Image (cartoon, rainbow over all chains, first blue to last red; front, side, top):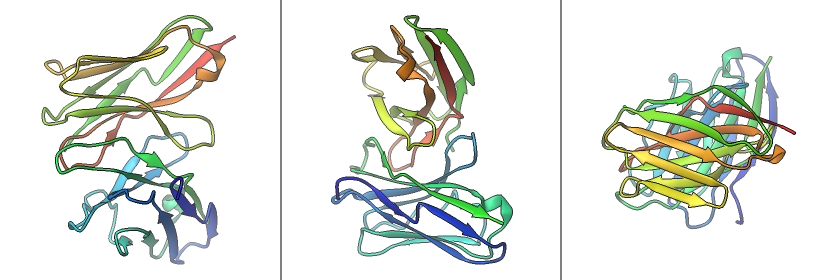
Length: 116
Length: 111
């Protein structure tokens, strides 16, 4: 597609419920990233997929968080047993990426998650 | 891992003045340094980037400088306009690593 698409744009969930957030990257971009942005704060790295390599999960804050990327394209971020501190905007980004060089990210519009 | 520090956290300038935002990074292996602009309620957007084999890069009113020895890089905006008001993030990465972002600078351009 023309840009990075994320859905839903807004999600309100009850504490303890599971949620799934979806990201559809730019066609042909091999790298896909998930970041979290709390209100008025910076961008916190969560997880990164590059081609067929094992994902870099070093930013996931707890084992309640997981993500997968199917067929090298669409990614789903799953948060189990949501807590109020999980409330944030979850941003997905994709980029073209070589073996040794980085390229600029294109971000999606984000999913605003509110846990009540 | 990489650590990126960004200063100042807020910056207010008069329209037409220059604005400078500074970042430092910790990992000498980092070789890519982009800057993002995030307007209120919108997604971050790449405005300029620089690689470690270059010391300075300009794009109209925006310039970025890099000092590899000191591990500093800076964003310079000249002739600021009200539409430059936003939060600006610096970032750094190298090799296969994802970008590490600074904490952001809220720039307010007063008309």
